[in-house]
Image 1 (spheres, rainbow, N blue to C red):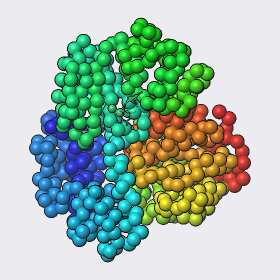
Image 2 (image 1 turned 120 degrees about the vertical axis):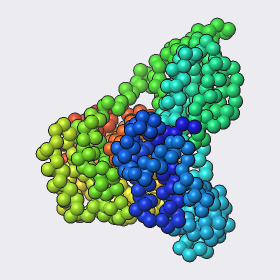
Image 3 (image 1 turned 90 degrees about the vertical axis):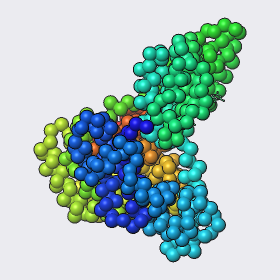
Image 4 (image 1 turned 180 degrees about the vertical axis):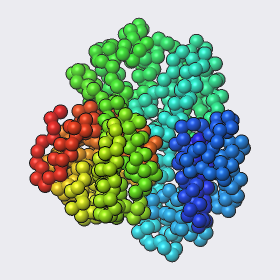
Length: 585
Ligand code: DGT
Ligand code: CA
Ligand code: CA
């Protein structure tokens, strides 16, 4: 198996997990975590670097010892340190670390005292009430664990869009380069840019379909071939992602692409429109009686029922067919429309890059402004800033802005919204900022009414600008909190403040439908990377995907504004009685 940077990162992360469970030296744990992130984000492939004799220590966070380990992994596919750690603690136990509420100490106790070795066994132990009897665990913790584990088990079948896309892109490029392949395209939920993907659907055309399915089954990352025939094949890639390939006739390509892009609900609605016109629409084409009248392109399929082509992101049967009929499809936002980013961290809290490096990375990506929004003091784990440290950072940003050309840092904070809706820092320092980004990081499970009131109260603060990742979800591990988004959206409208679409692949929060609600209420959405490193500024693209699924256009997105037009919008939220209408769209 060829080694990718992600594989090395995975080995290092597992080593860090196992060291942590065994109570290892925290600095050593951190060194492996940093190395994992750094290798994972490194643009050059380590396999190529090793082959070319390049210096691995050029990768940040990699020293002599880790460079040796990378060589070992590239050469042998594994690492002897990992093997010896696994001999002491089974590797399935590391999955327990990712359950919210379970740190290394608790995992160790569960393993040593209850012999819990997997998520399934953890769920069982919780359901049987064996956990709350352990020291350091209570009945509440046990119930919490049970709920979280069940959710993880339910969702383990789906992949984050970013993960699926990272696996699919090289495969698509490899297929496209084959002399036997004429056209190749992703379909399904991946093409619709859904935040999670169950499996990947690929369509191709070829004069020699059997050669294509054979080649596909031999792809370097395939671990299992589920089926392989003359025109279709299904495989599983390393990591567990399933891929279905279908090779179709060129004259059916558009019809097949429409069919396999889905969604199912959209297809049903489209077929019904066809039926009304006496047409049969399927994956082979559009037919009147026995005659094919369309199907080579998607445009021809839509045109056969009198519609313009509909972007895949909208194909969910949420009004897109009606909008297409009325020539009212949105002109969806694109990544190039973003002029800046309003949520990013530095080493001052839990980020990994300095102010200057974040600024330069943003400029390199064509952004003209970047808001620095480190955590506030309540998040002690993340080294949150108190008033004095924030004041110092404000001065530092002023100095940096005076030096840097082509990029402006905005002064902000990701301030914790406390349980009662107060903000975690004094008004005097908040008032010195360009923007105040409020977020909840605790008490996710308050009852709906209290959670909603908490957030509304925070939004009423005279300095409040932007509500960060409103639902608080982590796709794999934490559900959206119980919150009345309609009231939150109305409050944003009334206060003239903004809602964030956090672009981290496992957040993508606002959801697509919540974006749509914001748009419908005239509330501007800010698409933010929430970057904790320079490379994570590229998360913005995932945010743009989600925004497109939420029907957002350039004008609906706050950070498509130039800095000159942004400033008054931010300033307006910094007043107590802002009962104005947001800038007209
Ligand atoms: P996923 O994989 O769960 O993330 O979601 P999709 O949308 O990729 O679903 P998948 O992989 O089961 O099927 C791909 C597309 O094929 C789906 O979006 C629509 C189409 N399709 C699959 N089964 C049916 C069906 O029974 N009826 C219709 N009309 N379309 C179907
Ligand atoms: Ca699929
Ligand atoms: Ca499929």
